[in-house]
Length: 239
Image (cartoon, rainbow, N blue to C red; front, side):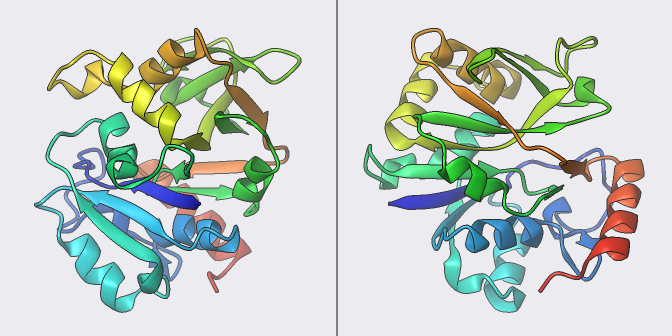
């Protein structure tokens, strides 16, 4: 079976004060998280897990009543927060051969068929890569001629690649292995997803698929929020 997973437990301090969770920030006519939900559902992902903090109950309150995707959602409450722990929180409910498709709830990207492009690729771990003018703000991914990931650099000052990961898919078994590879720690920066992927790829090849002619927005900063809003208002209305 295939599932979606979205980590939405972070505080979003860069964009605050909003008075509500950053995942509900309006871009165009919709909450930003709904753009990711739309892309997952369009790719045939019918059940999507959203991991939240106990203090972010405005997310399920809104999505379970006002979102067109409310029937697709399962909410998971998690108290140990790192991107990896929140991303892979649903693995305890799933079988090892199930596949999780993931993305970030404060991003908007094009083309919309990014998850469909990942579905065509074989592999236990496949990342969808977007070209960026500022890869130093993201997880930069270097690949070889066969699309095998060589290195992932998390917010490096001068990364070796201007391709960043924005979405991905992973088997539940592989996600469990990554969680086990990370050090036991309550410090989120010691359990980064980039660290987990770098440790995992040392023994298991991982693929990075470049999504051509792509655009990627992270609304975590106010200036990027403005850019994303202007782009969406110019190019589309969410159906």
